[in-house]
Length: 218
Length: 220
Image (cartoon, rainbow over all chains, first blue to last red; front, side):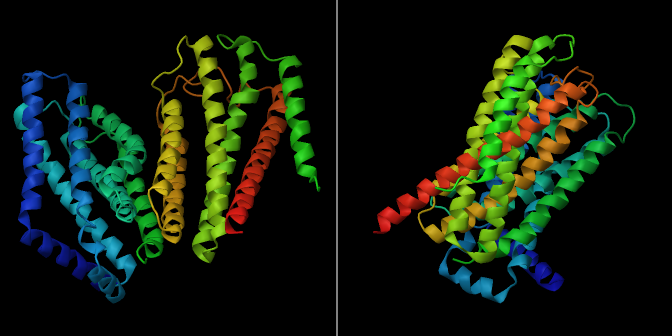
């Protein structure tokens, strides 16, 4: 099982590296939205808007990224592929791959965003942890939702409808945690919130693990 | 025609809660005053909704283990009845808020939780309608139902407790918390909860039976 998950994650990395344009498009998305934010705020932005805008950019980057994740698994060939590997290994590998991708992406966008709009965060360690836990929670929820949406005719439209209400409370929590990171001299704050985010990761991974085997066969 | 005892019990309890809820004495609290009686009609709706959604979740789980189409129909009916009850809960809450807070809606964890719950279940119905194949629709929506319920419980259960809230029962506001609910109110509140749960189940049962009849008519 663990061996399978490892192989599948490597397969995803290799395949997506071969089609790098998708990765580049996500990077360009982050770059251009940060620049648009910089232009529209003319470089002066309040701390609260800084945080809200940052998470909105991350959220839509996550939507784009996870929409790709079941693109290849829709055709007949995929059915054969599913008989080779354990479906639980497939969803775990997808979750791990998407989480890793989104963590990288949001850390990068944190950097780009800071360059354009400045960086009001003082509790850096907490904020980076918040980014890591938050983006993996977003990614693991979105992976299962993408799998559900890929079963419908209108997957890209439905993806937003299905995932927004599920992610909205998480987003509120992330914004609250980030606000706690604003005016603190200590590097590590908001322990409760971070523990909650970690728990949320476990819950959504567990749900994917339990539910996906029912989803894949048609 | 068989009338089960729980339907009569449901009618009696709700009637009792309406009469006693409007006549029995209530504690005089700041700001709330007589509007505290809304407890018997607003909070009970959410209890009833959670119960119906839980039943819907159980039917979805049982669908996934048996692939019996009637279970899927039950899950859908229970969820739509739950949404109906939630709309009533939202309306009673909004009218109460207009008189107590002076506005229909505020940005508050509990209200956000209610809004998220409604959105999640509305998304569930959109998902159902966007899949043509019946088996596939039943399976995918059962999975989303399970995911939605767990997420909803996590958020409306944990998130409001992590922050202060304007809503009664939180953050030192007088209201429906354990400290303010006196024994007189408990005597009306708990029967009202049970009564509305029974009435909600009855509505769900009736609308399920109507759907079964329609399906049978189509097949003839």
